[in-house]
Image 1 (cartoon, rainbow, N blue to C red):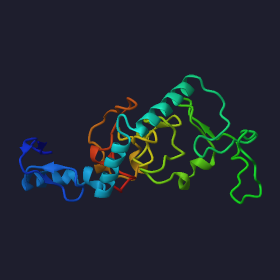
Image 2 (image 1 turned 60 degrees about the horizontal axis):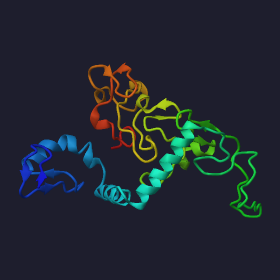
Image 3 (image 1 turned 30 degrees about the horizontal axis):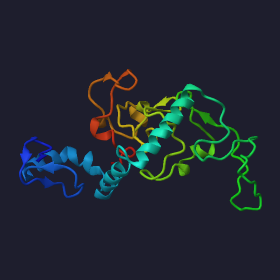
Image 4 (image 1 turned 180 degrees about the vertical axis):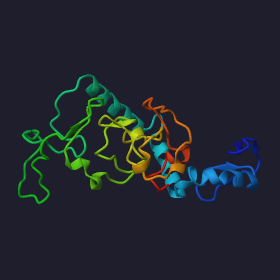
Length: 230
């Protein structure tokens, strides 16, 4: 039996939001009560993206092939965190750093128009997760499409990127560990945040991410793709 998202009672004939096709209501009255908040949170994503979320959960659910691959990958990265060593390739684009000889199974074909000998030196390395990238992978046009591509300029830490905490900046769809987005507290500088004063909580409080006392963004803005875009 489905429960109403507002009054929490069991719905004999549940109504579903026609836009996101996700939230359940017991009546039109409950939907009207919830609409002001709902349209700025769950309903900011088109129904097609909710379907993509559902498919991704199905494909990557417990016991699936993708789940097994993810666990193996996590184990490899945990070992790398415990025993960091200099890397020979960029973790973002997987191209060799300057001075690194090719692997035995690689062949240098300088006549190939797509041939790239190397990507220069290591440009950024996260001291927490050991993710290391070249300068090219930091460029905005290299970050790919959300839901389908892992942003190469984002390290594998959930709450920070190369040591810079996400809570200090405005929301961005690229923030997260590459699989799970960061939707925690944020307290960017109001003047440069891209938001008005009314987008922030009235009273200062302790940030649940870094512990700093500051005025945080209101909950309805934490899942914005970028400032001003739900």
